[in-house]
Image 1 (tube, one colour):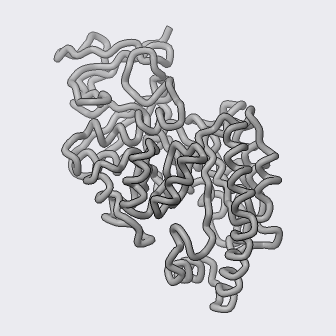
Image 2 (spheres, rainbow, N blue to C red):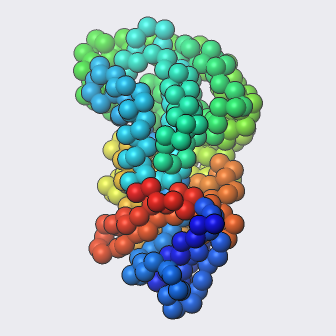
Image 3 (cartoon, rainbow, N blue to C red):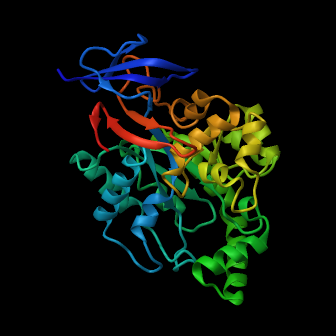
Length: 380
């Protein structure tokens, strides 16, 4: 039996902060002690926060390691390990690795064709070998406006640890890219498209989306059900789009772009997730609704690090400061995402749950991560 006691800490409980200690035994939270005295044998945390490990539902971070420069494909095993270690070092103890499925049969604007199935196999194989420090599940980002989507859906099954499937529709002229001028700036800036290439891309994608949307949406909904995965929507903009999401059985809304959509999600019982970078920067880089506005309207349930892993912890603290409730800020990155995807063994400091735990000091506005434990063992 192994036992660790972290004492003289501020325990971040689901509904409050409480002075005390947490007892970890054999990888599980064995007890919480609210005594003001440091228990015998405890590690003195000097008043730091002790919180559940952060749960990341949507991150582009792995793709950044896979393709560190345009046209550069990094060795997958090295990329996965670097991604895993980086997340561990930011307090994330559970991640749903986002992999795009659905591409064009010719090389598309993103410069990458089909890759999800072999990469997923590598991630799962590395997990089975014990090469990864934190817990990894899969998040399949199903691109509706594509040509290979149904074939790629068929490559996955119930044994693949697919935790989330999101309905992604990046057809130009709607949702996140309803403003084509913003899409033009994005694609020309990231991929160096000429004006003619951009016009051809828009025309092709709009024709393709109109042709395949209905069949692809139905296939994704059926596949998520077959995998046993949570179904998510992406970039809902209107109440009508949220109604369609609800009919599909969506339980999680990634980055709704308007307050109207967020209100509709709330009314439909769909959890709203926003990017922590949006909250920290004070607004969306795409010109969509600000996460802080949703928080003040009580329409923000979950934070995601999106494209900056370190933003998740900072976002939780920022949300807690904004709302005057630090426990609520941390719920958005722990208990609420855990419930949204059906995880019942983690996400809170409660006896019997996994001892995925972080220690954080707050010397100022920026949180300082002191240690990270997964099943009680220190990983960062």
